[in-house]
Length: 209
Image (cartoon, rainbow, N blue to C red):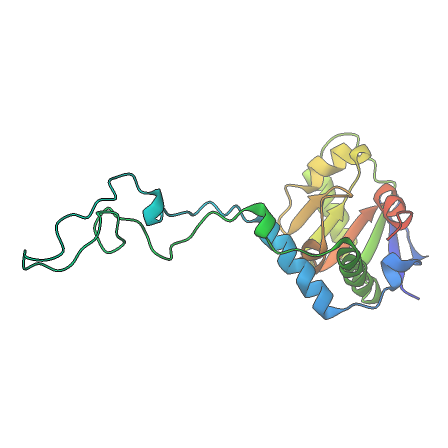
C-alpha cells in the first residue's frame, strides 16, 4: 500500500499515512494519460493567429481585365492569393473552442487518478500538518521545504484557508501553488513532488472519482 509522508510544520515531526481509495490505487493507463495532457494543453491555447482568405478581403470581385487580347497572363479578381493585398491561402485561422482536443469525463478522471497513483507509489506525495502562517513569509516556506528535503519541482496544493501559506510559497523558484480544483494531469506529471495541506488532502481523498 502506498504511503504519504506527513510532516508537522510546527514541530518538524514526521509520520506516515496510508493512501487508500481510487485516487491513489488506480493502475495508470499511459494512453489515457497522454490524451488528457494533450487535451489540457490544447484547452490553454488561445488560437489568436488568424489570416483572411480571399472571401474575407474587402474589394471588388470583378475580373481585372478581359481574358483575351491584351497579351497578358489570365487573371481573376484582385483578391486572388497570388496578388499583393489578396487573401491568404492555407494560413492559420482562429480555432473555435468546439474544435479543440477533447476527452470525456470518465477518461479524464482515470487519467488524473492514474497520474496521482503513480506519484503515490513512487513516494512523491506529502501532507503538511499544522500549516499555520501568522503572516506571509517566503523565508519560512523555503526553510520548511528544505527540512522536508524535497528536490523539486514541487506542486503545493492549498485551500482558501491557507492564504498566508499561499503567499509564502508562491515566490519560491520551482514551486507551483494551486487550489484544490486548479491543477490536472499535466501539473502532476510536471512536478517531482506533490505537497498537500491537510485540508487539501482531506478534500481530495473524500471526493469521489
